[in-house]
Image 1 (cartoon, rainbow, N blue to C red):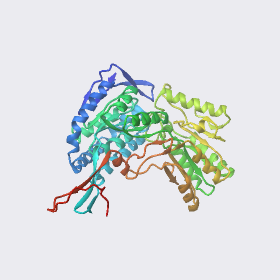
Image 2 (tube, rainbow, N blue to C red; image 1 turned 180 degrees about the vertical axis):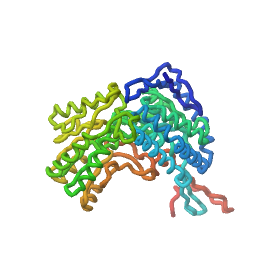
Image 3 (spheres, rainbow, N blue to C red; image 1 turned 90 degrees about the vertical axis):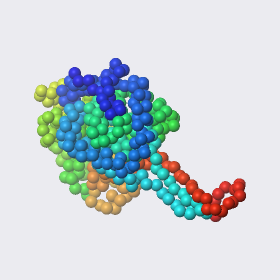
Image 4 (cartoon, rainbow, N blue to C red; image 1 turned 135 degrees about the vertical axis):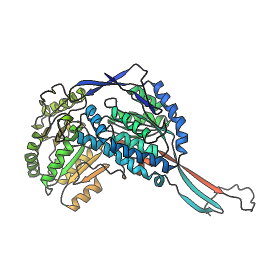
Length: 499
């Protein structure tokens, strides 16, 4: 049985708490490793090492910091296959999807090459008589990220790349379900030239999370996960005076107008609804066809595609559509919600509950499920399922269709499929959701824009990656300077003004 480690001060460190979490192979249901669960004392030791290293890193010029990330990206390409295999082995997603996970993080690292430009301040000459005024963007110090199981490469890189490029030291608390890739990323950062102690990976559970939230030297915390935990982390972190950004759950709707290209819409729904077994915060889980004719055609084309989905372990080949759910508990929760949909009156058009794969009977697989005639009071509509389940909610007209995403408590992503520019423009303007797609099913912004949801999908004023990340991981210092010019003035007792 492999015993994993923490990564602190540039080296692997064995856990000392005596507590471990099982790391499963979700395709077989077997324990493949044990991850140490850090105590608050272990977390404090990592913070002390990070704080000691951070001052020297902050004094390193931004170009040199960016060059470490340039080398890191080179090493990510070199080890892409190894990273993807490790990711798939612990998460269950397919190899192509695992590579996409790494690449989406890599793209944020590439954006951070621009740190010298993104960290520039402002300057005003002659702000007053002989007075110059300028601002500096300076790192916060030691910051932390608490990241989820579903993107064990991408989201850690979304957090630590801009934080480190801005001159901070970073404490990463990844999911204990699939911790190997975060440890590998830390190794690659060290190989790329990052000084020891700047990126530390501390595996753990709630004890480690609370230690992060309560530690006085951790100045900022980023989180991605469920909304209840996001609210908890946001409130406790803010109460402790930290800068906090938290991203929670989602229920992403895709509206299909009568004029949409139905084949394009079906292709989009298959990938966005069932890719990664639905374990994505940007998965489309609700389709809203407008009009009965549109809905009937959608179901007619969608059902055989769902029935034909190829499900299997990542070793089954690159043509596999999706793999198992991450844990037995995740599978049981999804099955419970599908059962509740049937009990509450939705029509289960495609039933994947009894899916079983020969040789992998103990894996956490579930087949694709497709519901029709779902209503807004059903559990499968109100809750984030996080599984391969798509609900079709029929709307008689555009105005009614718009109400579904507008009135849902989550506001992460949404999309509309239409050929009509006026409808698309109206949708983009009115929708109260953070990320919007027009004929794009999963509107995840590219690395140089920012990622963030609204309503109960996001907590905090600044988003992930893009320019917002550099704003989040730095604070502004404004300097007002006047140099002696030989003219002596008496004391002034009136507040300075622009006059």
